[in-house]
Figure 1 (tube, helix red, strand yellow):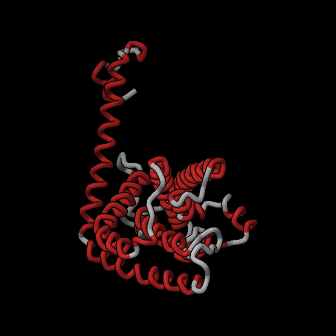
Figure 2 (cartoon, one colour; figure 1 turned 120 degrees about the horizontal axis):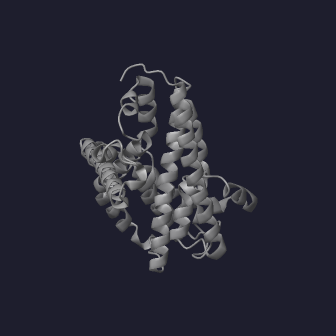
Figure 3 (tube, one colour; figure 1 turned 90 degrees about the vertical axis):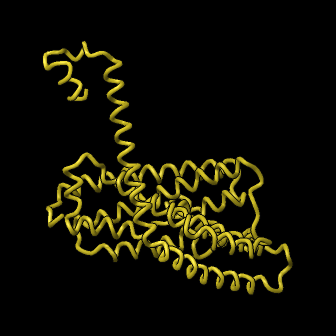
Length: 302
């Protein structure tokens, strides 16, 4: 029961006599106030990110250079093969589509320096202010993460669409609306998984002075095992199956495979269940790391 309501009703008022509609109204007011607070964080995050819109644009344009190189490499690999030849169930057109889609999914879900900023907040003592205010730090950082993704997508949408149009003969759309819905759901889960894992890694700053080594090690595994370098379908079947039970494929490969119709029936359902489980596990570990870290924390500024 909210203390303000009790004060308004009088300290001697028994809890059982507090009208239910009052407590429910108070709950809704508090919930709305909390939502407004984090919407404000989202808005401020978007405005701050727009200050660096040229950096976003330059990063996206130069980020297309490795993509172009990969497309040329795969064209050489498929050269001399029949049009319908496949490598790991992918034709040349599907392979190029895969990399185009991977670029889109990466733009929507990739963590952009959030882990470094969280670690810096801990090392510099900036989180002290969040311990004194009714602000949940994880939710605060999640709002900033989504503000960064929205800004990045808005700034890079035009060059990315133009690039896809240039390669439109390799790009195709999902067969039905259900595939679109499943793809969008998987992308949202991917973004949450990316963020929670990065947040959890940044929590190491409570115990070590420099987290960059751990982040780079994780990134190295993720870059290969999530499908950034190549579709996981080109790997041996046993290795593919083993990776499916790790969080890495669900950070990129899985939503792209859903979009391209590579997952069906029980395999699709199993993939979503595993992805949801990893999101929940990463969230739980992020919360646990924060609670343990706060016990170890001593303010150094902020």
